[in-house]
Image (cartoon, rainbow, N blue to C red; front, side, top):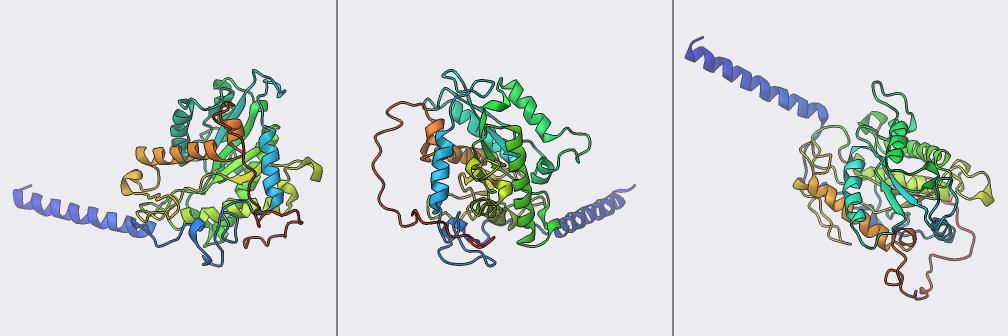
Length: 365
């Protein structure tokens, strides 16, 4: 091949490669964006998103406004105590906190574990075990055994607990952050978000069956995915996963017997579900409450998984949550007086009353 022929061949190859990349981009429908214009559900302020109001708990409220849920959270958290391998209270026992989720979850939680284990204020009874696993999204946890050539995520969870030297009877708290692979296959909102909610509900029941002393499952939705370059879980699916979490908590508050956490109301089927840290912000647009942003460098090359800095952001938010949440801190922190100063009686809260809670319509708190 002469020089001229080589140049023609190289030009055709470059043109074909560019066309292939363009076709791939069009097929995925993904385009990297520094911001989407979506508003964090914690800051919607009376506006609606596809018929849904704002707030982690609905009605633009970011704290549990039902007295029933407040009391339950306090009761379940105070019941968390060091247990021996047989699940009996012990002064030398252990409280186990585990994670459950997919690749993003294990990347973020492993960074959190390093921070927490190095924190001098962490309770000496607390053992943190990362049980989240790459490639194991909500459907894979809800319907284990359907993945060929890899073990069930529950089997791997058991192995990690054993390696950590703890028993299932000692697991009392879970942080779950879940998503679905390629959620567009389940339809537009709210269909895909309902699939995620239902799979997480099944996972909650499976968790309680596996860990009889499990009290609380803290839930978080996805981080920003506007930089995503694949259809794995781009925007707005990452944003909309927050509604899946909210609906799940709402179903439990509404008395769904399949999510019952209170023995006084019937057979216990699930732990108490409650919000953990809300992680989403609209890319480079600072979140009003705390200035959180997600820069391009906070995400890996695919724009979906967190980079080192992104993992650190989530780890720090998790640590701050467990150290400051009034209920979580009772079991997370060392029981030193400095960690638990004398409490001041709270001011009257119009959201908390002794009246029977209003039943909430599904998907519209």
